[in-house]
Amino acid sequence: MKGLFITFEGTEGCGKTTQINLLAARLQQMGHAVRLLREPGGTPIGEEIRHTLKQSSQNHDMTPEAELLLMNASRAQLVRQIVRPALTSGEFVLCDRFFDSTIAYQGYGRNLDLHWIRSVIDFAVGPTRPDLTLMLDVPLKVSESRRRSRLANTVPQRDRFEELDRSFFVRVEEGYRALAVAEPQRICVIDATAGVELVQEEIWRAVLSKLEQLGADRAVPSTTSPS
Ligand code: Z5A
Image (cartoon, rainbow, N blue to C red; front, side, top):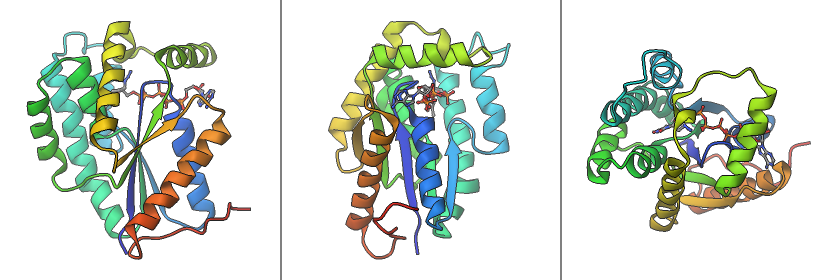
């Protein structure tokens, strides 16, 4: 039995981490094997790359090209070390960001050539593609205010991406919109401005619908909520 590969996408603060954890818990309570991953990162090598990309005190001069390749080095490792074996053994693989982030951030945000980006992604992932991508949609204002309130409640840590200006994030948003229009079969846009439980219910419906569509070789969970 093949597993199911689900990725979560959206602008920062849209609620990906909150929702991916809820979905993982729900599936685990039903007895399913779940692999919870994030990008960049998810393997020891990928986590070192993540540090270089985000927190390292040496990363101020990183070029957009180096950023693109590092994101995809982390991804190439994750796909081969974890994603493929987990899918082969029938697990639900849930990943917080995947290649759509590269198109939105390095393509639209950094203005790198989309043709080159797609070639790099193809090399990094080969035939491994998400079955379903949940794109959590919130206006930039909501994303900014959620990030601010989270910052107020956690110990601040330097993050190179947080230092980018607002116009960058406007372009990222535009990139996500274009992706959703281009790939409606794979990408399900979720209105993530609602409360956490409502968003989770919409996600759950999207997962069930994808499983029904894919048919009998996938692990279909019962439609009733776990007790
Ligand atoms: N990046 C890239 O450029 N290219 C790539 O190929 C890849 C990534 C793979 C990773 O950052 C950075 O790497 C990211 C893109 C880039 N950069 N930026 N900027 P990360 O992993 O550290 O963070 P993130 O992915 O951007 O997500 P996040 O900021 O951690 O946010 P989130 O996971 O989407 O949201 P959250 O933590 O679940 O929620 C944020 C807050 O909102 C929190 O206080 C929640 O309690 C609250 N929340 C959540 N849901 C709700 C609802 N429904 N209502 C009200 N409040 C809510």
